Length: 433
Image 1 (cartoon, one colour):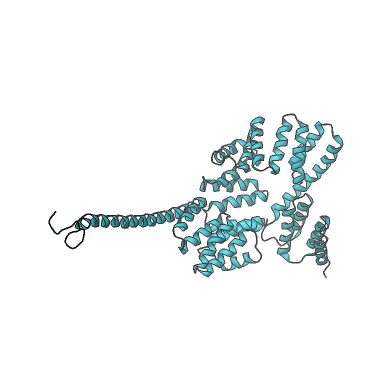
Image 2 (cartoon, one colour):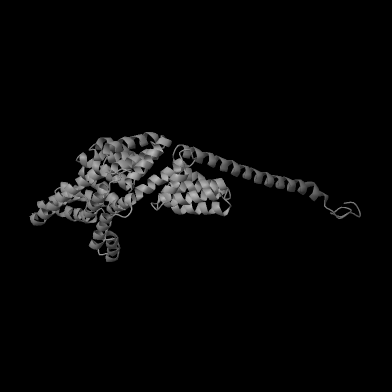
């Protein structure tokens, strides 16, 4: 080392540190900056990709896939107004109402369009069957050329079905199909309305169309299979139920539908295994309990079948098939007195249901005569179909306002279940001059 110099050099600096560490530091800084930019670029790319995937899923009517993409999109862009709104709307369309409300609130808090917020809030309520006068307001403000007309008709159709306003639901579905003939739910729900109004052949046609438009849709598969079973065509129903169970092994409706197919093929043990699995999913399923009783009865065990059939029938007194099976189980045990009493009840029930089906076919959205609604409502209440009966009577009031015979029918019903306060109100309206 030269005399007078130390390891820091003449001025006390460290040239080696500058020479070697500074480039290293700059390189690291560059790498970090480059990495950050790359990550930002990837996140931006991924967000755009998710948005495009969501749009494509919506075009294909695959709303479950769309919502999954949109939720990931909004997690990356929590202040994107379009993302928040579309995520909330898609959640609503899937019936995920708490999630829909959360995204809509976030959209509103960030200054979203107040008119869109108002419309979505109306659709949220309507879709849940809370209709009031909202349907008239929506129909009056959202015309056939409005960009959201299909969404409004979709929500109206679902709300009308929940409220059991089947004639209005049928009209909403028909208008929806006229505006967008490729919307699978318009056909699917139209089929459900037709099925409920005892137009089974039309229901099968509508379900087939829905299935053609959305072959990957679970609901379309199950609905088509269900109506095939009603038409005594289990062989046609079976492949669709198999498709559902391959993807959703715990699907209660598909399990019970497949059990019915197996029963038609005399495969009682296999059917019973599926029924038991469905009962594990939903122990209070009336259909599962009835099928359990039917399978056990067909296996020759009337004693074991009776409690299953009795429980199913007591939960749903309007189920003529279950009552018929219960009578058979009682006869096989020699309980002829009770079987005879229930057989008379079964005869009355079958006649009532036949008349109810005739009336349901008559009820249309433009029907002015209240007689069919009133009679159908009274029959439905009489056979234990309480929700259907009350909705039919309310439908009669909507068509004509105050109507004494309808109020009198409601008074009799409330009196019969011990709701004397409500009975008194309805009786007062029935006697109002």
